[in-house]
Amino acid sequence: MRTVTLGALAGNFGRDLPRCVGKAVGIIDAAARDGVDLLVFPHATLGGYLGDLRAPSAESLPPALDPEGPELAAIAAAAGDMTVCIGYTEAGDGTRFNTAVCLTGDGVLGVHRKVHQPVDEGTHYGAGESFRAFDTPVGRLGMLIDYDKTFPESARSLALDGAQVVATLSAWPASVTDRAARLPADRQSRLFDLYDCARAAENQVFVVASNQTGVMGSLRFLGQAKVVGPGGEVLAATRSKGGIARVEVDIETELARSRRVLDHLAERRPETYASEPEGDPPCA
Image (cartoon, rainbow, N blue to C red; front, side):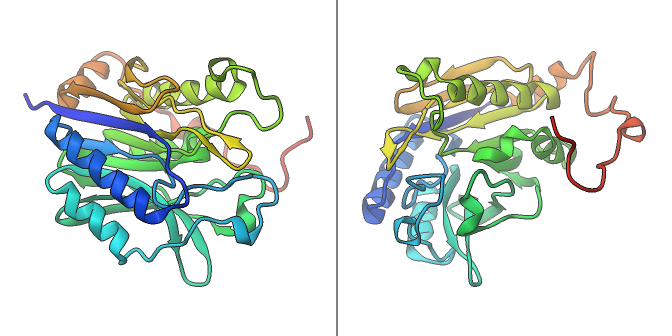
């Protein structure tokens, strides 16, 4: 029996890059003192997210960082034995990517570039092309960013690649078209929680879901960081406030228990599932 402590952060991170790095390092240090083994930061922790999903201007974009630069080096140095997932804007070859990186003090364990791009995000960002799991000190892990978790195929791809834990890093705002007066009543608040629980239950994995809080431009972020068990049950949550949702679990034991009678991955019938049709989807 081996237990680990999983932590999901809700927090506000803006454009002030040195402040973002310093704040992240301080949070890692505090989490280490609390015995956290896996800490998942929000997407766009280093430099913030877009201020508007519709027609964002080039001048308003977050800073694009070199993966080999000093910012991620500082995060790795602070991480030490802890496994840390953190999001930032990556400076690629002629474009930028919404990127999540998983690392320890020994270096990078895995990288994910956001595949699914909502509204006008693709105007300035390239899209990732795959979902891959990788080994970490807490178990085999995969990462999703924001809108990726809306699509069941994303988490299922990671689970089929052996992921025991899916880290979902988000800068997920309240509805931009029908905003509620209170965040808990917002349509996106309900969907954000629904996706976390559904992705965990349908794949029988742990989901460690982080998110931004506060405001960036026209976007008001939901918070709602949480750890979800393989039965879809919320084990710890921050609600809309900042902080770390953390829980101590035995990953191997809990996954085995959840799959003892019904094993969703083993009992799939992929030969019966319709393949993707060619062309545009039908009109509603």
